[in-house]
Image (cartoon, rainbow, N blue to C red; front, side, top):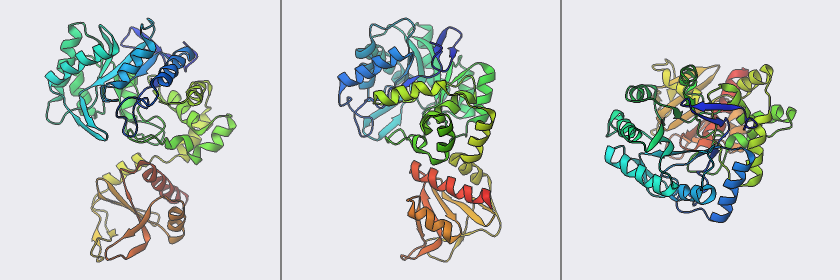
Length: 395
């Protein structure tokens, strides 16, 4: 068991290797909807994961929905005693790409009953509230899980996709064993939260450890050019380096990367053998400029004088959330749209490389030094923001 990055004990009584297996991709595509295209192959992959030493398997009600839990049961039931399966409750998925939270206590209870049936369990090892429901106080949703825990149907409770305030409210109701939020080398918004959880003995299970979007197949960090040189020194891949960084980041991190191939499964396991020196860690912080951390930074700058962002009329308007530094301008036009102004030579490089497109200020007049990007395009957002910030950092 020690071979996969050491171990971590969840809730004081369940010790697992620090690298888990995320099963989400073993569902129908696109959109993680429907049964996996080859259930027999999926079952073989899950069994190989166990044979390689994986003991922490991550699934959810929405994966399939339901089909993913059933596939895990098909592959691994009857379950070995050292196996821990985590699932998530509180989100409904009626169609591909269509999800909505449902944190009502009745929906939570129904979801637990269905997961118990699909996973063929009398008690679920770890259940997360998948996402807080804006229409339901998180205290009510977590309270329903706590009641089911007291009734013996749940061993441990976690929360996912939560803010600091939501986590504090959940912890006021019951003990929280694990938190699952988005976190990776370029998505570092939870740095402070992570450190606090490490001190409190709460597991942190980062989703998107390789930068993948839940609805997409690409794993940007697995092909990240900034990681290549350091990875080469370790005879590793960029993806392996990104996983190794997570394992070095904090002792309570338990990544759950997913895959559908035996090769990538073995590669993920091998990442736990990488030892990063302090110089490696400093280089990673210097080379990989976190796009989401940058976006948060931009959001903190209000009323930056002298910053003018073109609008659709072409006359220009003031960017209420903008940052001007070293000759570059970054402005948030809305919560899902970023525009960047850089010297023309850098803009040309970014356009040629496919990161961003000319910003059209209206009437078909692209602004030669401006680029625009939609924040829901994760791969492009990440590439553009990192390239832009690299320009700023090197001036």
